[in-house]
Length: 361
Ligand SMILES: [Zn+2]
Image 1: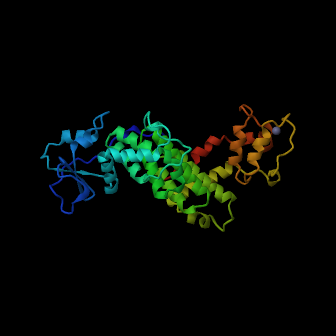
Image 2: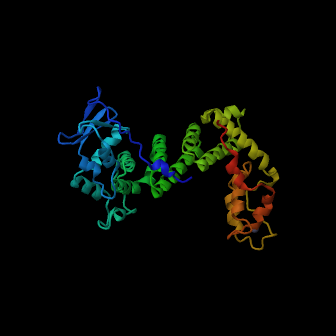
Image 3: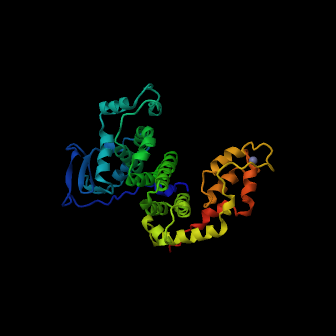
């Protein structure tokens, strides 16, 4: 699914609140006596300069609009719905001094120091560690408040670190990355969503059963139907080829699925099992069959068989996927594979995308 443009609009609460909310305390770093606007974030007051909040030159920031619309007294406090920690990081970016930015760049730089941040990095040199949550937070708020230059800058600091961040981050971080991916501009969004989902699926495959329900809930929240299907298919794979269990209940309980997810899985699994029966055990192969017709040379087949024989024949769908990729009309046809498996006797694999429709009201 493409990121819905409507989700890109910032959610800003701009209702003025009474002066000095009871529990509000000034932030220890970002409460400047010379500031000319006060923002309330999670019980903490930030007194900042309108200039700093409005100077992203490419366009007018959401703050510019907020200040233009404000009708009350200039001392009125504007509440924002953000996390304090993230907002503090955002303030750091707004007020960072040249030497801080320079040191950050030097920590990352390798050869080229000109030509913009994009050419600042070289993959062959280890990068100095940066605080990923800090820069993700800056990117998030700069995006939310329509400050594209700050957003692009934070993204260019982050990007070279992301591939090493994915395997090491927590599930909370992965959820956050998917949330960001749903809101960011398209190029960043695709990268974040693709990699976060791939990382999550990898963890599910390594038998981390407790996160199946959580992954499904995340996929539902963002309407990521292909991610949802991949999760259900992984559950099904583990059911078919994993260690045998006494009952479906015993298998599903550790997965942490909620009621409608369990129902959805059971229905989808039943439908697929009726359509894609595993081949009879005598067809299970562990070595490349010496096949002649319709293959003259076995040109591509051997490679394709190599991928197939390491799979478990009790789950025939991943095997059919490979066989279909190498059908008669493909650029690298492996005809004996399709013939051996009688691929044409099975339904089209697109049906897999439709069977796990949630029955949630
Ligand atoms: Zn062949």
